Each structure stands twice: as C-alpha cells, then as structure tokens.
Length: 577
Image 1 (cartoon, one colour):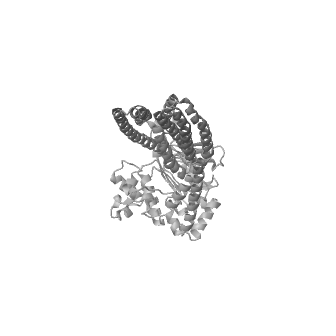
Image 2 (cartoon, one colour):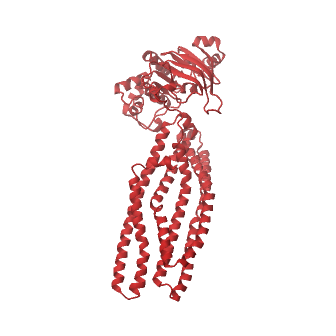
Image 3 (spheres, helix red, strand yellow):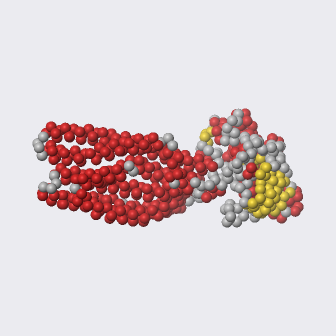
C-alpha cells in the first residue's frame, strides 16, 4: 500500500518535513517545561529568590509562546500536506477509472467507486494529517520523558511499567475486534450510496409510479444498517479513551501516594515530585496519542485497501507495445470465430462462434430478441470489451493491434443509454470533435434531424442542458447523441437502438441523410422495429448469442422464421413503431 500511495505525496513532501521540524521543536520545549518548573520550586521558592523565579518564569513564558506558534504552524503544514495528499488520491482514482475498460467498471459498482473517492479518501487523508503531527512527536515525548522521569526517580517509574502491559493487551484486542467491523461499515456505505444514486437518477420514474414511500423505506433500511454497523464498531473503539484515562489517573494517584512518602522522608524534593508527575502525564499523553494513531490506522486501513485495490486494478484493455497509430484505412469489419463472455474463464459465453464479414460503406441492420447479444456484438468493434476467443478486424487489422484512441476515434457509437452532460448544446456536441467549426456542428445536426428543434430554442446552440439532458425530450436527446457521433467523421458508425424515441418520419429522415451523406461510412443499426432497418444492405438476425440468419429484408421475409414473426407482430399487428 505504501509503495502505491507514496508517489501521490509528490509536491507535498516538503510540507511533511517542515511539519516534522515544527513538531520536534514544540516537543523539546514542552519537555523542558517541567524541568524549569521544578527549578522554580526547588531553587527560586526554596531560597526565596524572586529574581530567579522571574528569570526562569520569563524563559518558560517565551518557550510557551514559541511552542504555541510551532504547534499552530505544524497544524497548518499538516493540513496542507494532508489536503494535497487527499486531492492527489482522488485525482489518481479518477484517472485510473478513466482508463478502465467496461469489464473493469463491471467489477466495481459505481456507488463503491464513489465511496472510495470520497469517504475512503477522507479517512486516509485524516489519518495522514494525524500521523504528520503525532508519528514523531508521541514516540519522542514517550522516550525522552521516560528517561527524564527515571533520572528523577527510577523506582517510581516502575508504576508506569505495571500499567503499560494492560494498555497494550487492551489496545490489541480493540483493534482485532474492530477491524472487520470497519470493513463491513464501508460496504454499508457502498449500499447507501447505491440507494441514493439510483433514486436520484431514476427520480422521474419514482414520481411517475408513486414509489416515493417505497424508496424511503429502502433508503431507511440502508441507512439503519449503516448506523447499526457503525455503532457496533464505535462501541469497541470508544473503550480506548476510558482505558487511557483510567490508566492516567491511576498512575497519578499512585505517584502522589508513593512520591508523597518520599517527600515526607526527605528523599525527594517537592519540585522533583511536581516535575515527575508532569513527566508521567506527558508519558501517558504520548501513549494516548499513540493509541489514537493505532485506532485511526485501524479505521483507515480498510479504506487504504479499498483505494489501493482500485489503483492496482489491472486494466483489462490496454495498448500493445508498438500499437498501430496510423489512420484506419476503411470501415470494413470481420468477425473470425468470435466467442465472448463477460467473466473471463468462468462466465457463460454471450456470443458463440460468430463469423461475419462487412464491407466498408455497407449499411447493416441488426435485430433480435432481448438478450440475443446484439449490443455485445457491436461493443467488440471499438474494444469496449475484448473477445474471449477468435478475433475482430477493422480495416484489415485485428482491433487489438490498434492504438485504442485511434481505433475509437474511427468508430462513432451511440449507445442504448443516451448520456448528455451539463453544459450548452454546442459544448456537448464538441465531445465528438473538440476542434469542429460551428458550420460542421450545424451540418452534423442537420444529418441527425436535430438542427430544427435546436433553432427553436431561444439560445439555440448555446441552450444550457441540465445534467443528463433532463430538459430535452428523449427523442431530442437521441438526435443530439447521433449528431455528436457524426462529428467524429468516423469510418464506422454504430446506432444501438438510438432512434427508438423518435417518430417514424424523423427516423426515415435520419436514415435518408445517412444514405446520402455517409456513403463511405460503414453503418450498423441495432433496432427493435423492422422499419428502421428494412432498407439496409443486409440484416443480421441474432438469437441467443448466435447469428441465426443474414440477408436482405425481402430474403429474410421468405426464409427466416424469427424475422417473419417480428415483421408480422409489428406490421400486421398494428404496431407501427
């Protein structure tokens, strides 16, 4: 874990070192205070020397002010280092997630990744800030004050050694019992975030089906489970402080009891007893801080592991060494005996022994029932997933040979779920090509039949879109996503059921524009309605992860039972969409 997170301290190590320097000065001054106080009592007051009292007292005042300023500076430097470290962790997590393939993303839930980037990172950040101030100070205080206390009276120090084993055993048991509880607590955070995220994303569905009460109960269950798990963990952890306080007061009482006898016998001075009590208090305070460090490490270690798990996740899809960066020559596609499973090695194949050849510039329709693996088939083309067996070639080369960015730039894909981001329409469209001119944006929108409705808005292409495009209709959202893909000027464009929310006339206009403007672009259209694909050069009928038939609309109507059934249910059954 240290090896993984150490590079994330880059730029903030100087603040850590400066903080340690301030803490060392603060600790030295604090250690000297009891000694000077004993000198005031045993020399100044005993000899009634007010000049000596004022002189040493003045020194203590200056030292207290310097110690205070060093403590404040250490806190500031620790906060700066800790906040910077936390920011670097969040950035590293986000950057790593951006590199994830779909398979990597499938392994971690979205809610879990959010928890790791927020709650887990905050736990690690807070622990790091505490370590900056106490990791050096507490051991230093413990060792030096122990030596000074033994120098005053070694026998009295034995009281402390009787208490330490009890504290050590208690702390070990607390950590051993609590750690699994904190791991469980973080998983409950994942479940809570998942409940909130799902509800917010689907709030319109919740309202439409009047399911607010159900969602409240579901959230309450997750929230109560998190609270109960947290309380179980805290019930154990909170035992640490009472144990430390009991030990502190017990030591002070015993020191006063036995030390008082020594003072009465004349074998120990009053000032020495006062400084000894202070040193014992400092020793126990250092121990208390060390125990708090262990507790914080306990709490954050589970978070450490979850963060490192993401950072060390092996990226499922990566560029090969010497990946091809040349522009893809054409949009030809070939599947050679392709088998694909989402879980490598153990998962059931979603696609089995697919053999398919598509010429550059062809328009291919893909149809099939739910779960027939239509989307899985096209996602292999831009390497959103990698094949389990066989190969997929684009432009005559295996897609695994291409630089990923080059490959995906050549493939425009409109996914089933249309996603728009908060920002203007034009900013969203520039995701397709950040350097596109306004004229190119307008032309892409015309091809996607989006220009007219954009021009109907008061701010036109500067119209602000809310998160997820919630202030435009489903059909408008689909057309904007198609225009965004067209701006890439891809060799291959894939429309994954991306005209389902538009009317038949608009659907026909989009297809006509594609035939007219994208003659050299290979077009793959996944659709549920035959009207959207019937004028394709060829139509692929998928069934249970295999190609059931390939042919034109007329050929499939004569020869394929699945196609005939779909056609009859839609056209003769009165379903026009």
